[in-house]
Length: 558
Image (cartoon, rainbow, N blue to C red; front, side, top):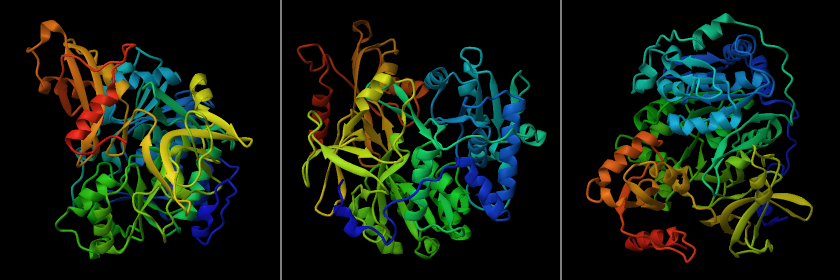
C-alpha cells in the first residue's frame, strides 16, 4: 500500500470507521439534534431539519401506502436541484427502496433505457420534465408519476434572477396515476418501519462503459457513508457551515458533497436549480456560504463577473471540486481575489465521488490529490497488471470502502472491471495516471474512449448510435476535440448516404441532434467525409481523426 502521502496528511486520523446505519438515519439524527436549524434555503424560502424530516416521512408513507413501493424497489428520481430532489431522495431511502437518480437533461428516447434496466414502476419528476417522462407510461414498466412544481418551495424575498423552472406555476394533471407532490405530502400517510441496513442497496447512479451502454453502480448505505463521513472530516465542516449547492444532485459529487455531507453534519444547503453567477454571488454574500463544491467551468464563469469583489465572497472558507482540472491561471486569479486555493479531488460514479483529495493546506494544481481515508491506490501496467512505481505511467486502480459492490445486471463488466492484488479487490478506473515522490496522483490520459465536456462524461458510441438514426447518415464517428470553454467538446465526422450528398448541411444535423440527445451530449461540430481511416478488420480509426483535430490546435494526443 502506498504511504508516501502520509507525510502530507492533515492532522486527522488516516482511517475512519464507517457507520453501520442507513443514510436516512443521518437525517433523522440531525432533525432530532437540530430541529430548528435551517436545512434548506431556496430562493428566499427556508426549511428546517424538523420540517425536512416530516416531509420525507410523509412522502415515504405515500410511496408505500398509495403507490405500493416495496422494500428494495428501484424508484426513478428525475428532477433538477430543488428541495423536492432532497426530499424525494431521502423519502425513497426512508421507504426502504433504492434511488435511481437520472440526469434531467436526458430526453425520452434516452430515459427509456434506465426505466427498462431497473424495471421502474414509480418516478418522482419535476413538472418541466413531464413531456420527457410521460411517453414512457404504458410503453414501459412505468406506472406512477409524482409531479413536483419547484415554485411551491420558492420564497418571495430573493432579489436576483430566479430560473424559469422555479417561477413556473403549478400545473394540473388529471390523468390516471398522476399524483401532485403537494397532495402526496399533505396526505401525511405513515411510513412503515425503516429497516434498511448498512450493506443493503441505497442508490444506483449510472455511468457509461466502454461500449457506451449505461451501467448502474450498485452503492449501499455503507459505500455512500464512507465518502459522506470522509468528506465531512476532510472539509472541516461544522453544524453552522453553509453549503452553496450548484453541482447537479443526480451526479455523485453533488450528491455526496452538497447533500449527504451537509445533512450528516446538520448544516445548511443553499440550493440553486440553475447556475447563474450573479445569483451565486448574492447567495454567498447574503446567506454567508462557507463551503462551495463546484467545477472548473463554473469557477471560470464566476470569476469573469466584472462586478465580483473579494468582500462579496469573504464568508467562503473552502472552494473545492473535480471533474476537469482548473487551469493554473484561473486558480491563481481565485487565490488573489479571496486567498483560497481551489482544492481538487478525483473519483468516479463507481466510487460514489472521491477516492483522492488534495489536502486543503497543501494542494497542488491540476492534481488529483492523495488517496482518501482507507484507500489503497496503485498504478499498474494495463495489459499485464504489473504494479508500477513512482513517476511511471499506467492505469489507476483503487481499493477502498467507497468502491461499489458492482454494476447492476452487468456480470461481464464486473469480471473485467475488478482485479485482485495482494488479496485485495481493486477497481480498474480506466484512467491513466502517475504519482510523484510525495504520493500525489496526476491524471495523464484515459483508457476508455470518453469525452469530458464541462465535467460531463460523453461516450462517443452512445452519440454515434443516435446519429445513425438520422435518415441521411451512413456512418458516424464521434471524438472529443479541444474547447476553450468546455475543456473538450463533441465533434462528429459523418459520411452521408449517397442520395443525400449535398442535400443536408452541418447545421441541420446539429439541430436534429439537439432533439434526440441531452444538451451536454449532442455534437457541436459536424464534418462531412467521403471515407474514414480504417483498420484491416474494418474498424474506424477514431483516434487518428482525433489526432488530426488536435494537431490543428497544436495539442497532440498523448
